[in-house]
Each structure stands twice: as structure tokens, then as C-alpha cells.
Length: 338
Image 1 (cartoon, one colour):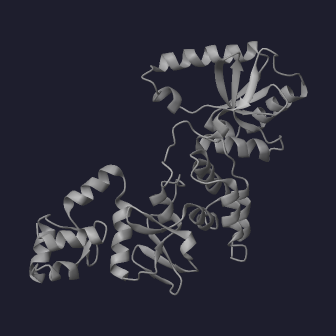
Image 2 (cartoon, helix red, strand yellow):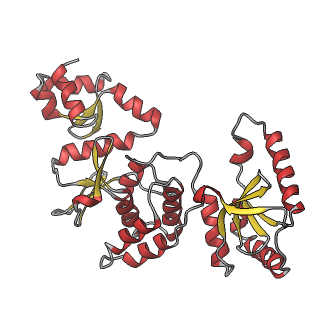
Image 3 (cartoon, helix red, strand yellow):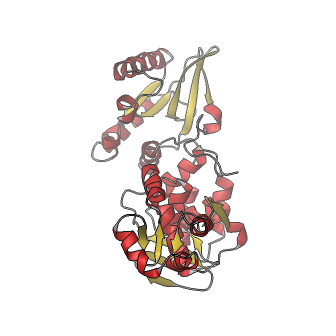
């Protein structure tokens, strides 16, 4: 392929404009036929990529990277930064189920909208920008603060919890990000959501379960509590009410349908039974929460927690309880940016 066109493709992070093609010697009248025969792939008006590049990103689920690059190439505004939901995608944050597909940018001097993109006008200091796969993007914490003004409370906490569990940010950094927008519209909503984020929720279900339990008036629990019997790890509880023997486990179908360690579903179920029986032997009292329990059956689960807490008692002297790995995942879901 034309080396000058390949250079433009690399320079613009996987895309090139019609102007780049013309500058590399491609005849303007040849571009249409090349698109129709599949030799080029159009991303948006005036911006293209190679089919193999698009297919590679499609296989990885990262075509939004090319869509962002295409908008940046089209607008030609170096001060524009990928932000909000688009930045959340590029950072690998957990997204709401109903999230939009448009490209979001922030520009310190310009507001505009166009087909498939929106540019918001707001300050973007250098300390709140970074580079992800070659593209200018708001930092992780700035992104969480931005989406917190538009996403629901629960969706924002889910995303923040997930980032905390990977060690990609700290609660202090989230607080600072919220404070930096204290006079912006929606800042209170962001502050409330980021203030509710905790280290130790390793799945959206665990976050939603904690929020539901605390929202029902129960004490805030400790997360990722390891149960030791001597030097042997019995298991790690999703949450435990501090100073009590009462714990909660958040069970999803993935644990059984897609077990880790090459185990069969039957082996997973049997291991869970053995683990639960040993917890009972150590005077620990548990309630299991599946995703459906967070809706209509929640009052029943909350009442069960209340009954167990009212019994009092304490864990057996034969076990030791401590927060496991500081609440962090043993294997990060998304690697921390260097």
C-alpha cells in the first residue's frame, strides 16, 4: 500500500481523511470505487480506514477507538479531548447497559454537535488529560467525575468501584476529582456517587448488593473478608458486618456457567457447599444474594440479615478474619496505566 497513506494512518491512530489520501497521490475519483469494492472502509464522511484495521478493532470490541479518532481527524482541533462516555469506553470502565454510542469530546473553547458526536465546552487542564492508545483522553478520575453528572447513581458507583478494585485510582483521588467540579451543574450528584465508592466490590452485582443493603438501613459492611483457619484460607466473603458473624455472598450465574481453573459446574457447586458448611462450623451466618434478589425479594433478604444481626454472637475462636489483599482483585480486570 501507498507508504504515505500508511504514515497518515499511523499518525492519526488508525484513520485517515480524504485530504490525506489526496496528499499521498490517490486520485479523488478513485476513492468512491475503492470504498464500494471494500478496499477502504468509511467511518464517517471524509474519514476512512483500511478494512483490516476495522476488522481487527471489531474483533477486539474497540471500534469506538476508530470512531473517536475519526471525529478528531474531522474536527482538526488539537485542544479537543475525548471525554465522558467515550473516555469511559477507552479506559475500559464498566458501562451502563443503555449507554449511547456517540463520540463525546470536551473542548475548552467550543461547544458543537454533529452526526454521531457531541463536543462540550469546559476547562480541561493538562493534569486532567492523558493518552490512551495514542488518543487524547480525560484521565480516569476526571472521566468518572464527568460521567457521574449524567449517569445514574448506581451506574457511577459500579464504574468507580471497579476502578478501585483494580487499584487504578484511590478514594482520595475520586474525592479530589469531585471537588474540582464543585461549582459545576450536577456536581452534587457526582460527589454523592464517588463518595459512595468503596474498594472491595469485584463485580457490578457486589456493588449493587452493597448499595441495596446499606440503602435499606443496614450497617455498611466490610468487603472481601478472608476467613482463615490456622494457616489455611477457608474462603473470602464478599462482605461481612464488622464485629458480627453475619456475612453476605453475592452469587451470579457466571461463577457456575463459566468457572475458572478448568473446573466443571458440578465441581464449583460442590466446592461452594463445602465452603459454606465450613463457614457454619466457624459460627459464621450467611445470606446469599443473587441479582434478582435486589428487586422484589430484597425486603425478605434484608429482614433475614436483621434477624441474624439481632442474634448477636461472634465468630468462632478457631478462625481469623481480615480484609483480603486490601480489597483489591488478585488479577486486575484492567491493567493500571503506567
